Length: 149
Image (spheres, rainbow, N blue to C red):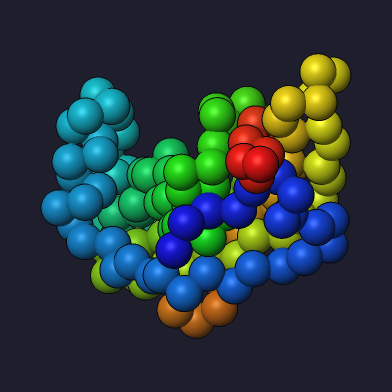
């Protein structure tokens, strides 16, 4: 499904994204390796066993990236110029290997660019685990194409 053009976004609309992803140990390991994040809470089972969580946590930046990625097919796939910002990022609950994450987007703002050729759209993105616990939320602002004439 292609993404939405600027004109198709309506402030207040909420999109429940159908795609989900179960996060594997390998996903977390590779993301930590690619980003050079060697935090033992993500990688060292013995270390993590002695924390309040009792096991390794999925890297929070991976969780955020996945949350955004799950929204793209329904929002900006092929209709984006650029992501402009990710703001107000929060991780209210931990994510563990084996958790399945889904996302929801709510359009919170939209405005045309000063030249009127494109539009800026802000969406509040929420990610939930399989138990419907909120695990990540953020505001994503994107520069969007207008529908071709």
